[in-house]
Image (cartoon, rainbow, N blue to C red):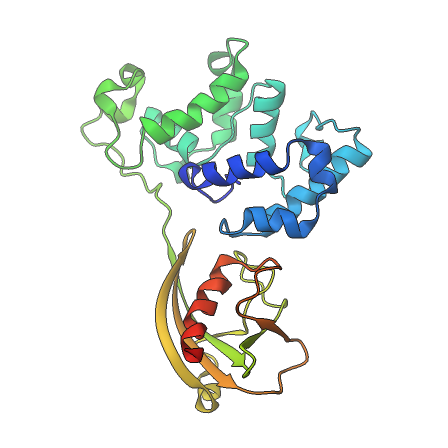
Length: 292
């Protein structure tokens, strides 16, 4: 859940998730629909599907044991260097750091060098004895991430109360490097076209994959390349939406029709029995006004 999502957002989702699904074996037999329903609102639903696939592999092929090497753990769906190192450190107390934005920022400021100029893997490898001198590797890996989030913050870091400011070149330097460690939100513009009918149904497709939304979505066409298709559509509204690091500017169009393309299926805008992403539900709420 923490991949691409902030801790404060994740906490209530995680608590609800582990209350419903208490262990690995239970997760391996839980339906995708239920898992996605618990995940609903977090976005990037491929993460949830990777979690299900990984769990099945661990339970059914690995006797419920997580691999102990980075090479093997990265063979599992959705696990790369960052997640792999985090798991091996936290689960097996291995001398590893999960190189997220927080950890990179801490190391960059200690050295007072721009992140893009640093080879973090090499820095960790050369300083292993200094970094991992105790047996609390798990605590250290977590502490580095927390330290970056709470003390060595992207903006207005708490340098004066920082316990390591004596060795921090960023703190000592009068010409501190300007760090570019904040995530820039990309701006995307979409036209969304909704087929509606008099039964208060909307046509959905499973074919669209925007990265953050890959279950049910609406027919989406990039604004610049398909303006000629707007003539037969009615403009409903424009609204802004933000998902993770994406700012979306959306023009919503609609038409009433009994015929729809073959890859679409009718779906009631009031039916919540099946998983529908929050992003799509927001569009449902816009469309509802047409039936009032």
